[in-house]
View: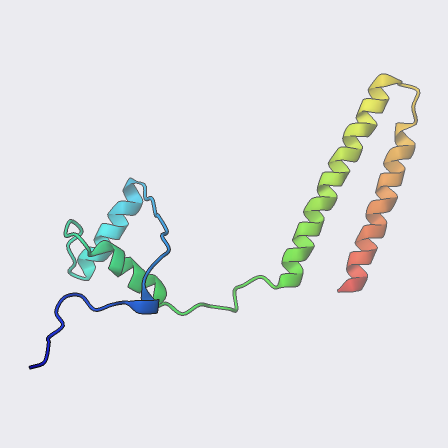
Length: 127
């Protein structure tokens, strides 16, 4: 006599271990409810929203054409760092000018401008 295995099937390596929590404001929740109604699903029924959103997200194909190339994102990071450095230089220059009005602020600003021109030329030659 064979033993029937009842109950829930084991998931094995397909078990879901990770959690992502989503929060919606009122208008966003209304949009989610409208989408669920268009698929004839009840928002208030337990176990419908999560699986629906999972299938909706995972069954979509990713569009690789709209992604920013790695070189451009790295360039953006470097430009942000340069901007931070410029802000620090201007802050120091202003501080020195306030401490001793006789200091040569124009010379420091000229150096900063020359460095910026050199940087722009370097970026343009890499393209």
